Length: 235
Picture 1 (cartoon, rainbow, N blue to C red):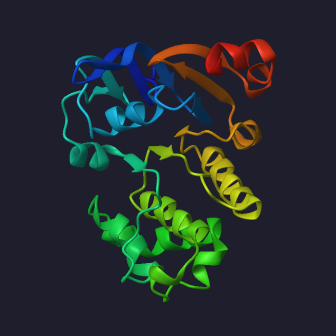
Picture 2: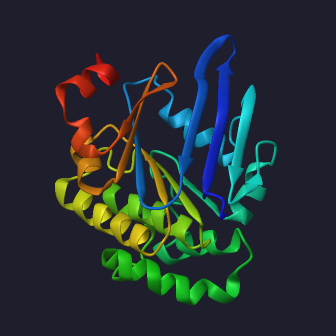
């Protein structure tokens, strides 16, 4: 039996004495899975726990059949975890191309850099036209494309995205949504945390609802759209 891409069991995490995640169980294996919930529900903390940026109090995280609960973040990257935090942080003085190439070096796959650049430019044609421009002069949407593209340069087996649509125009949201759909079709599973329910409905096959660090909903975007489901998560 093939192990799921990501399997989380009984995950609990505290910030000081405040419980942020409580007894969370989750399996991700293919497609786009969106995590939604009000502010403070644990969405960002969940992604940070998976990528190794915060340490859980108890529980187990397995990636492609291997337990990674105690592995440092850098080793998780080498295993194939790509994480794009919120805020689209880029190196402003580097060009678009140089920012992307940073991602290729994280796993030491320099031989694949040219091929991976072509893939990123296919997903985000706007970056190809500006690849030699400093990132400082780009829009917020273009910087978000760079951040996602940089993660893809490391050939991830799972991509974690935190608020990828925040503050973007509808046109840029559509471009990024198309790229995420293409990634899922290319068998790169995506786990994203997002406030924009309309964007989630357009790309996710599965939606996880968190409230108070606990899973209170697990279903499709269509099931999420019912008043009862929304009240369970957000009321």
